[in-house]
Image 1 (cartoon, rainbow, N blue to C red):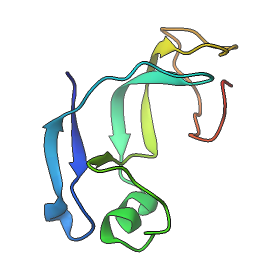
Image 2 (cartoon, rainbow, N blue to C red; image 1 turned 135 degrees about the horizontal axis):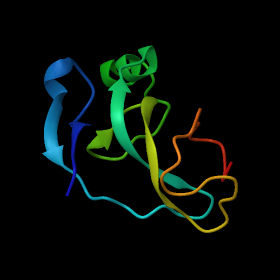
Image 3 (cartoon, rainbow, N blue to C red; image 1 turned 90 degrees about the vertical axis):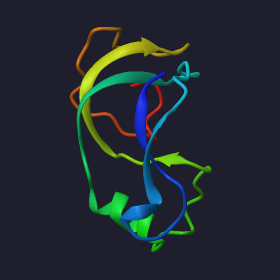
Length: 97
């Protein structure tokens, strides 16, 4: 199981904890990236602080909108990439591209 920093609630940095998380298989139109480097964006900070509570988050959410690495798995319906490729830009709302 991989490790990640998960958000246990809204609030100060103390709501973040280092924990093991499941490694899900990518779904339809999704890819999974083996992260080599990650950044903290202003959106991550606003979500953690509770300024964006209109965006639903699951319990123990793993934040992160900035990451670099290589594709290690592709879901059904994905075209234009494969395992081992380093995507140039990947947005959560893009489906399979």
